[in-house]
Length: 415
Image 1 (cartoon, helix red, strand yellow):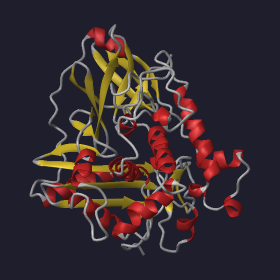
Image 2: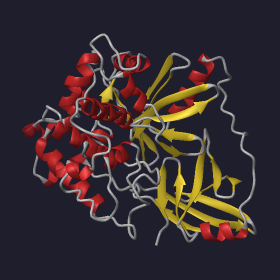
Image 3: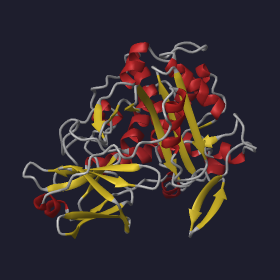
Image 4: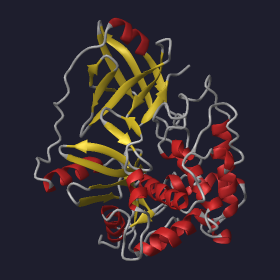
């Protein structure tokens, strides 16, 4: 049965841990947020664009569209490594070195004409690759041999999070670890394969944890960096993480490894994560003095909405998500003509905008038509079953639409 010690994979919630580790190294004088990535990752020469910094990667504003995930299993296989012989992959130096090289060289090859979405700091677009490189910076600058070992010593141990780690083998062998359920050919199937679709670099999403451990983690944030095992980060450092550095969606912003939004009279800070067999969300509010943890071992669960509803109810507001607060408008003929076309994400999402009838825009996402509600001259709401998605047109200086921002990703127009 599931209890406070049951291990869950929470994927991108890991990004908050990565940012925390970076901030510890900043406060220790080993890094600066405005240091160039090229100073720590030699394969990223920054030859095709303006300087990309640590801060840019922490805010998902390095200029990179979503890219296909480079998987840890594929890299291990290319190196001829087997876990039963070399140990758990997250702690293997050869895999980390090769993974960093592959990720950095791929990003370094992109140009403004082919593959970049803008100058560093110009646009927000969620980038797992960037957080992967950040974890390699932690490994290279920190005193430990790997990102996972750094977290063990400098974050998890002081917090008493003894059932949290980056391992793949350990949860698969633990009797009190969640089975991962996903839909395969229309059938829900479960497994304990924690390698499934796992990124090669750990900072983007390798962490596993429990409800009990995450309560300690969020209590630390509510206490502005303090915990019984000593201060994890200064109050100023926590404040920097929780400050909105980059705007995205309609009203939200992104800090350093954390998202920030205003919800009723609360500022809500947190992060979500999803993967085959994973739906997770953490959130807290200093005004409410409360935090919420939602962990699920099934894909596609609206855990963010559940988290919002719980915080709203705790704060004395209706937990019902108001989906009628947008004022409907329309796009003019020129906007529809410029927006019409196909857009394809490197992560797999395909999107098509078209003129459904004269003066009316239509949309298909992965081949399925969705209700679309234009809410201003450049943006629209995409109605979903549980929640709405926010879509914004991204234009070049000449007015041409070269991408759409949908959710947390910029998706480029197909050539």
